[in-house]
Length: 297
Image 1 (tube, rainbow, N blue to C red):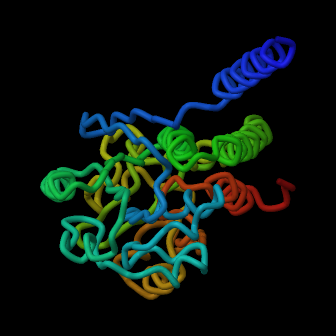
Image 2 (cartoon, rainbow, N blue to C red; image 1 turned 180 degrees about the horizontal axis):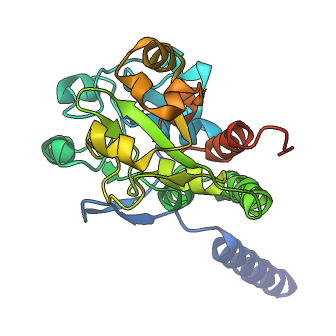
């Protein structure tokens, strides 16, 4: 009788222990994501093979420590250096869907342009989880980084990345707040003449760094502007890449702009401003140093 009671107690304790263990075991991660096309996807597990067809999201994936999961990128993804070892799939807009599928991805990330709507549909129809985001502003970088953290199962690294950028931007903004803000023309392209507009994260960067975009009121990210209007607005400073600076300073037409004639064309590392990535804080520091030489940032 004693052995029967003892056995019963053992079974009861074992059952309770098992039930307790089951109660403590975390449920399988399920993350619901609604992207910038309005498509909602549910992820039941963390993706292991990611194709990132946007240089910005590629940088973010490496920044939060999952670059080893990236199996496809665009021809423009050159940072970090480790990304160059990832298979180049060509263009990020209207991508080669067959080439993407050949990498056997379980997640594809697209830029949410109308040019990519068909690719997103085709990839999802092939059974591949696909998300599309617009990353045009600094706030977009914060948002997408945090979502990526949930998707890859590392919210700590994602939040750390966002917090670091926010802290740097806040510091630069505070340091430039009381400084003179020179007017700036940020050159993007010559024919047609394109400027950074108010709809671009570059305009945000310029304001943070203590400058004033002469075309900030234009809502497009990269509006076409008339050269005559640029002359009328007479910016104190021109921002351009090194090759463009050399061209401007040797061109008679460009020398009718006082900032060019007086050698006030400032050059910057164009690879740092391809998108609002994890380097956007460093970009703000770099621009602030250009615009305010002699000030320590």
